[in-house]
Amino acid sequence: MKRHWISKIILALLLVAASIAGPSQTARAEGGVTVFAAASLTNSLNDIGKLFSKKTGYAFTPAYLSSSTLARQIENGAPANVFLSADEKWMDYLAKRKLIDPATRSNLLGNRLVLIAPSRSKIGKVDIKPGFDLKGLLSGGKLSMGDPAHVPAGIYAKQALQSLGVWESVKDSVARASDVRSALVLVERGEAPLGIVYATDAAITKKVRIVAVFPTATHPPIVYPAALVCGHETPAATSFLKFLKTDAARAIFKHYGFSAIQ
Image (cartoon, rainbow, N blue to C red; front, side, top):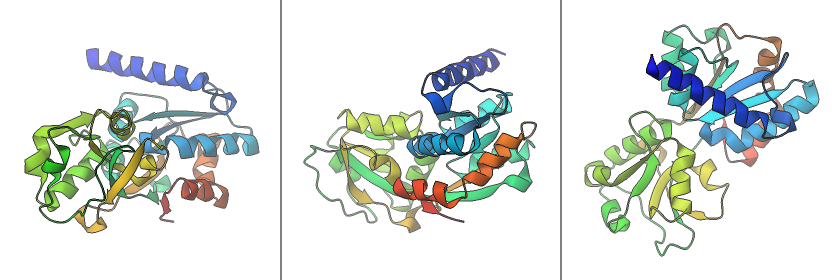
């Protein structure tokens, strides 16, 4: 019961924040669409939401957190119309509970996993290969990444490090962030000498630089599925889901570094 009320409080705070963020992110209203999306989509979806509102007149209200947190919010009854996850696991989680409309589900985007350092770091380009000395590069500091227990970016990162045979050497040095943007912030502030985030996150700030890109073979493909939430399939929600696949939306996603799957 306590967890249920905590979830409701978090949701309320998200929607209040969205209501003051700008004219295209007004509070959820009649005919509007509420979108729950992975934190890594923040910048791209804000731009897409503004364009969508301008073209359709529908209000766009986003909420950005880790896919796991948002999926559990939906499970607890949060009034989301559309869910965009940073992995298939959390979309599957809702599908098994019959909380998304399977007929509307599609894989929308792809991404890359990168190793980042503060922009002023003395760490140069890193050769990511089996057994590379990640522990030594940390020099006693923390490795910032999403919590691998539930955050998609952290799950991908752990899988990559395990495949490279270096996870055991750094697992006790991991700073487990609540979402990928929080992991990015730790490196931006210099509180962690290295971090693992998506390439699209690293691209939005000049406070970090990419020191290596993880080979795609080291982890499962990074996939962003989207779907309508059962019970909230409104005309605005259907229109938004279709808009995500338009040339205009795809151009925005491409601008931020996402790759298109469809």
